[in-house]
Image (cartoon, rainbow, N blue to C red; front, top):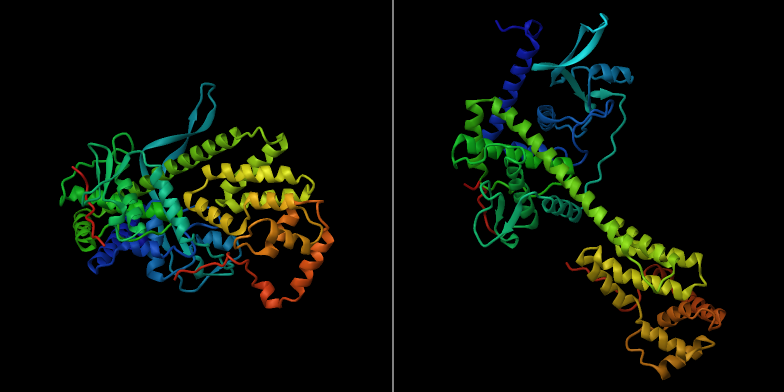
Length: 494
């Protein structure tokens, strides 16, 4: 007759739970299911498992347990808590709900000892051999009284790709794209070797493979120091692949990005190698999860340091911007506009700031023009090339060249009709929309025209336009246009 849990030690209970966990994982692999992918898919909408009472994020083996439980029970809510915590909040566990066992390793204890004055005092000491205990938690979907959890707004695809690119840019080892067929990390050269990115099935596949190899690179002696010179097909090789696969998955989970699942293309072969390793020693799973947590933490720390360095560099560059043509106030506005643009990742954010400044100080027309000009010149250094190109395209479509404005200013006018005539007679209008040009010149020529005539004409024309046309008005020339593989072997280097 099997012993009941009441007669087992905490160590035995945890050991039995681990054994069952490994058996479940092996069964999934034998069924052809990639467990890491399956677990990652379970956290996409609401985020990683956490305790809403203590605010703790579950890590390592406990994270693995809760991810697998979420998959098996189809839980979408990532909140977990103990019975005591639920009761203290006035919640109630639903009848028949089954808990999930989590581990708690004890690394220190409090002892009492006599000090030099003969007094007994308490002292915390570190244990040479830690011991394990356990506790149980319930998912929020098993609890009555707890409110709904707000959904996590997932990042857009472009945001995910940008984050992944920045993580890769923070790599401590060189990443080389070359005309060769394999992606691998070479421990001897401390280099990640990749085929050209356009040889991958997609950008996501390229980024996922690179993060996988970056996970391997953390094993370098100067980093986390794992054994990396393993021969393909050996158990040691499979163990390190398990480290990197879990490590890359934990990294993506922590960052909130979900890339392609093609970091390991030959799933069947890899799953079989992992099955062999785990069947020989079930504890290899928990070593791999421990290593994976270290890998993820290490790469995220590097990424955060990289971000800080980039931000510091940008702030330093921004603070150095100075234009002799601008006043002190103009230079200050220039720097703030660029900071707004960098923070938002959008040229338009800086322009909106400057436009608000124009409304506050309507008389300084020339000053505003100079600041905006210097802004557009300098902001290019701080934003991606794609945004610069978009800005330039919009500028060409929406903004009349300064020489056109200058020529109109020289002509002078006293009414809309006179300006129209002089524009047509005195300078080429190309394909510019005359009414739009008049409006822009009107704003530029503060005090040199009869504003009431301009706006009366504008309002008269606008009133004749239907509500639908007003709501959907687009300046001519500015209509938006809607425009509707290689299998790679992932191996370690010698």
